[in-house]
Length: 352
Image (cartoon, rainbow, N blue to C red):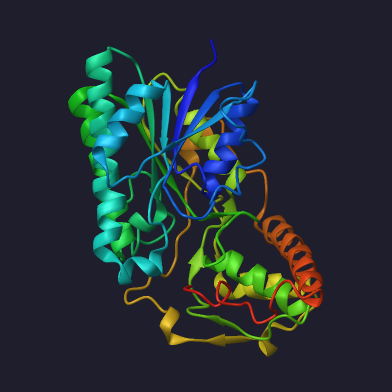
């Protein structure tokens, strides 16, 4: 029988790539999604089929990390072999403005999921493997390179929430002998990245500027350094963690750091644009407490999982720029036909 996986946060960037990976491995994939008045499944629409149709391999369930009773029902109904908790309020800058909500979803939400897991395993006598999505933001001000033994020093409500979730996962693994792995993933991007995250914010702006739909891009700290990789590479590491004989925690990164300024210069150069003419600094996008440099040491993952990133930083940004230039061309064509206003830009000038 096919393995059954439950992906919490399946409609996000990582969830969509993970679902593709698991479907390719002939899993039966179930996803937890939040109820919304608008369709928010565009990243997985190419995989989803009506559950009444023959051959449906991705099934969706309504639920929320703030609702423990729903989580328990989903566990009982799905009976998963593997659970991937990718759900979160994941925007670092926004977490300063929505600290309580971020803590509830990221930290307490994880506790609710793990409690549901513990109850399900105890009551059904089943073996379930669980992946918890950690973040390099837990390291915060700790000097790079950061690995599994680096002391945590988070600098944002999001980082603090992720650290609490990480520690809940470790505690439940040790207290109840649950198969729980923490993936401490450094920044990972793709053309599916949300438009308010800095990489996509930049490449989306490059595309729109190249088509005359936008003139300015407003950013915060150009000196901040991050370790950026390709999201599709990173979800493979998630899966590999759950295929090991013993659960453990792993740092997943490229081992290379680049500044936001480098990202901007490279992205604009791909479209043959001078970034200095279009980029301005807006203090609203600066964090109250900044994380200066994150760069991961993936020695453990390379040795034990056999995992390595395939796409380089330069290939990643080039891929995103090409995608967003094509998207902007389509947007411009629609605008000229009277379907889209060229003033659209709120998503591009959002939080950094």
